[in-house]
Length: 93
Image 1: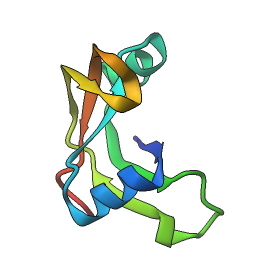
Image 2 (image 1 turned 45 degrees about the vertical axis):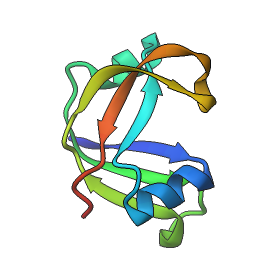
Image 3 (image 1 turned 180 degrees about the vertical axis):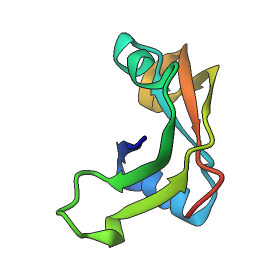
Image 4 (image 1 turned 60 degrees about the vertical axis):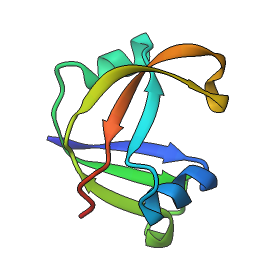
């Protein structure tokens, strides 16, 4: 198994780090459907942008706890309700 890498913006990275954001959202698209449905990962790696190799200050590691499909409205995705994969970030390693 491999790790699922999810680069995020600083505002979301900081929210995940302090524990106010327990899920990371990705739109339900063919790209993310192929990477999530029917796949298992050993961990989820959240990075603030694309850090240099070895920069652990911009990296967080979580146990893979799966995902769920849901619908939400969020400024990042525009004004309309969209279907997303909500990737669980409840188990920090």
